[in-house]
Length: 463
Ligand code: AMP
Image (cartoon, rainbow, N blue to C red; front, side):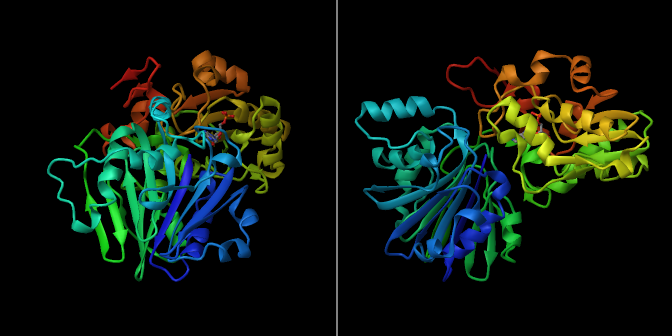
């Protein structure tokens, strides 16, 4: 869970990177970093915390450049602290190289051990470092791939590095005079290209182009490797076609609703999730209340299908981060209360249907149900716009361990009792799959327990 952004060919690439990564703040709040090249040097700044609070005008002065990459971090591998903040920058045979990565490598421990056995010193505890460290370890010339003369220096090394890693990656390398952009062959994480006059942009989600008034051009395709330099942009597909595994949780929760990813507008898919919940539901209620912000779009779909009023029965305080981030249960509990306030004006005496996007540990829903009752709701019916979360994610979403996932410990009736609702209904897996055009191209392991890539040392049920 991270956001990445890239800019090529701009007088102030570092500023574009700053605004672009700010628009992806929802993808990570732990740290932020920007690396830029003025075509002579690659320089980098990294700070803990939020983009707007952490990066100051003078920081940007120090990384002025014509090309830049940026990152917001939400750790899934490695220590969460600022030490593993990205971009990661290293000196290698090709010169200074910086990289930003969104995803998670399932064979990180093996490659790390291999590199260490070979005497390579690794400075970080994050899988992202491997993308640079592997560049100096070998070269790969995939059969049938015709390399442009300009790409014969860097690309065989990049192809070698990418051939060694397994898992999810959307990434951008920044070199002094060029940029290399890649998405893993299964396409787990989104990555898109945008244009603003002569400036080329890359982003985890299309919402990052809007802030710059840039146009969305197209998606970086699964398995595609792009080289960008002053001569233009060149596209390669070094690896044979594999099955796709777009992350369905990006559509359920993680991406912003106004973004375009995996060939769909997130808003439309999320609204459909609410519509299908409504079609499958027969409960009688007076009002539909979304859990802001993630339940809002499915709640709109639900209310429209049922012809019910949609009201803001929970008001969100925007000055707290995401409740999930807190390290202990007690702190998560308090944070839920800090985050939402019930709105008595629409709840008093009502039969309330409350909708959230997902139920993971159950912390949020339990607090919300009791909050709604205290504010006068006569009945509280909980609806979840996705199926029960039963599988941890190994490909870049920060889900808890299998044991912490409430749906692995209780059946739906017990979860209903635990959260204290009058009824509890989840969207079925079948309905969730029907919200996307080609469900077989998605990874829904968190809901189905069917994993597209095996993980060393774990017994997983595979497709
Ligand atoms: P829980 O209290 O664990 O059931 O949390 C569920 C809530 O957290 C839902 O309202 C989601 O919007 C949100 N959520 C779900 N998955 C994640 C995640 N991986 N990281 C942060 N928030 C999440």
